[in-house]
Amino acid sequence: MNFYYSRKKLFELFVLSLLVFGVALYSVYFFSMRVGVATVILCFPILFVWASLYVFLCPPRVAKIDKRAIQIDRAVPLLWSDVKSARKTTSNPVCGRDIIVFELKPRVIYPLTWMQEFCKSTRFTAFSIPLYAMKEKDQKAICKEIAKHCKIKED
Image (cartoon, rainbow, N blue to C red; front, side):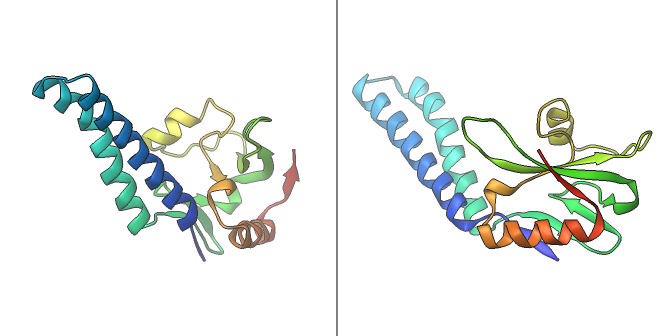
């Protein structure tokens, strides 16, 4: 069973990228910057717009769940036999973004992507699913599917 990011959230990201590009473009015009400086300043907002447009048009998969494992994004599949438990928690009290964090059994090691390496020391950990980036219907469905394979604790 596949779960994808919400198109509405991805569209909001695209609109944000257009706003950032607009502010950068206005700044370049307002301050009458030279062509070289303007090119450097506009380079990242343009890349942001193109990347967010690509993600909006081709939404990436959040997770793929089957009887044997769960694959989060494009990482190596996490075997259910290696999962001790999962907990549903909030990323921070201000935003209130729900995530599911998987806790692995001791001495279980998986090769990590660069993003997992970055996240492993944060509240998200290396193996987590951002529920806030999904539709509410999909949030309930993925929680129900995960509960079939391991216990989900509430934080």
